[in-house]
Length: 246
Ligand code: APR
Image 1 (cartoon, rainbow, N blue to C red):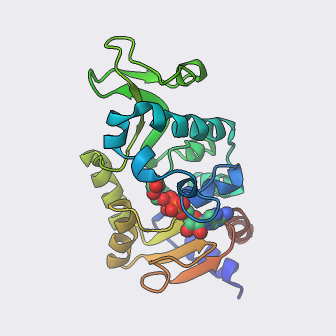
Image 2 (image 1 turned 120 degrees about the horizontal axis):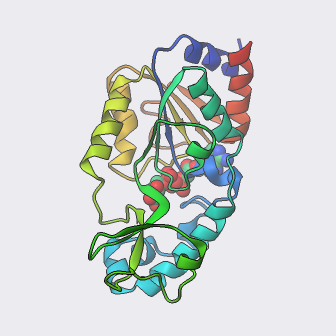
């Protein structure tokens, strides 16, 4: 039996599939990953543009990177990988998506139980007075950076910067999903940023079958991965889905 058919059978015979996704699943939607040759961190130093301390010190520089990121995210559409995950939820196999991505593409593809571990780019918030407002093009185009209507302090996207902690309820929800699943699909993540990267190990410690889809090996591959599919997420998930229907 071919590997795609085998994994389709595993999914069909599962009780609770959870997907854990990273930037790699959105690359084919035009959003660059963070690491690797074309990664955002090959252009910017994450400690200078994605750390909470750098934001507080120099919001102008951080917003230069954020504006570039928002530009691609706003234009991005779900690709076949996101769409297959949406269909797997509709068919009742996929119970949750835990994503490290902030692009909202899983929701656009129809997934409803999406845990956004690193937040999302639909809101801007003021760290000073706590005011939140929906992201609007004209707002993020304010130079040098958008400011809070109430207290005039710089607004930050509702994403988790380095140096910030993950909200407890998000961590708990994600951990519970990792503990509940009997299959975890790890898609397009380098698996090195904690605490998110620890979730597949929790799934494995609860005897979940780990299916990893990536262009390269990661710390998971030789340690907890049961099935490694070394190819693009959209191709791989489309081939697996072909056998789900049959
Ligand atoms: N299909 C499958 N995997 C892909 C594809 C693709 N088309 N393109 C790239 N990849 C893989 C890369 O091989 C890499 O392993 O996706 C992974 C992307 O890794 P990162 O860029 O490190 O992204 P991610 O793992 O999501 O980063 C985690 O780091 O910078 C922080 O907060 C940021 O959420 C992010 C976190």
